[in-house]
Length: 134
Image (cartoon, rainbow, N blue to C red):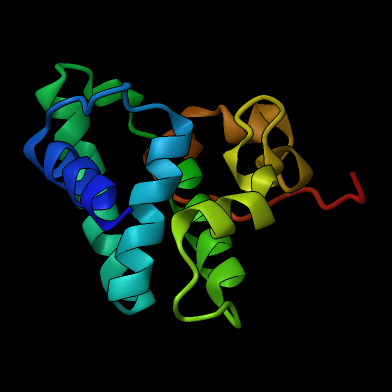
């Protein structure tokens, strides 16, 4: 799996769509890799910068969404806390399937749609405005 992770990270950091595409699960996997090898502030900053650069390289800078990016990195970091140090991607993904679903998204628990999809949330991190048991 390390080879698969390395290939994914190389493609992402080069602004190239990796084999199989760069969908939500691949975003989560890249963030997971960063968080396993860096402290949270450094992992978050790197993921934000590289995701913006990736979107720019694809000529789609408007796809970058600050609140979604930050919220997912924080959720992944929370889920990594207390996990076995040698836990691989497959085990993490199986244990956290809710992080891999895009629609419906785990963020639906924390944000009202009009908040999450606002221009303000796209441009800068917005704190959650809804909590529920869903």
